[in-house]
Length: 327
Image (tube, rainbow, N blue to C red):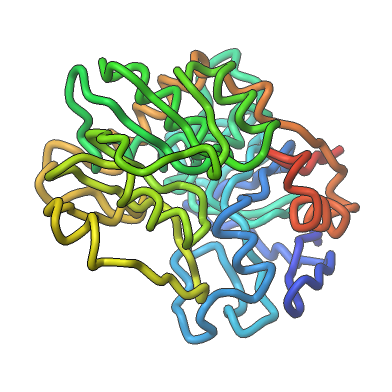
């Protein structure tokens, strides 16, 4: 049996290839795809060739290398059509999320699937990885009751961060994004104010800043926006894009702290109380309650995957989340 999957064959080159499935393993499930989400951050760095070619792949479901060709993607929802004889935790008909590239049908160990909560639309489920990332950022940032927070970037992760921060008891969430569409969505999901980068002046004295834009220039702006002793959390991955920081001003004299947040690991200070399983369980519980529908701006059939990546790459002003749909 053969399926079809999306491959990047060179920077900005997309090809749909046949994907042989082989026999189903005893601990595996067969999943027929329903929807998958293109990551506008990490995945687009890969698409554009802005990742170190020698970097190891970090998911067992990926194929190829960052030197191209590569089969990439990590946010897909589908329905289980068959289970291996040793699988006891999943059933035929279950709707599940998987960290798997864009593919019409695939085999995956049952342990790498996450059942969606009952009644949740598959389209909402494709945002589960982004919700988990946003949760991880909030855990790393550790906002305190009554603090003022500024978030740079209102892509999908930024918009989810805005919603989660409003649940923590902070007194104010201000967001910064150059695109009017995203600023409008930020206000819709709960931001107290949304400004474009030129409108942001230094010396704002925020208690906490989160850089989620993917733009290296935003990190300097974040350092200039926070108060003495504050923390700047970097959740963006810049790939091979150079980052230049002016560390002779606010960073030095205000004794600021920069920390990295990456979803592949949980802060050691939170372990073993917090595990990946607990984090994913929280993401699933939030899935029915967050404002997600307005974030999906484009639905494009899987066979037109090249058009979908072109939309993200060339029309960011009109795009937030692009979802591939499957028959």
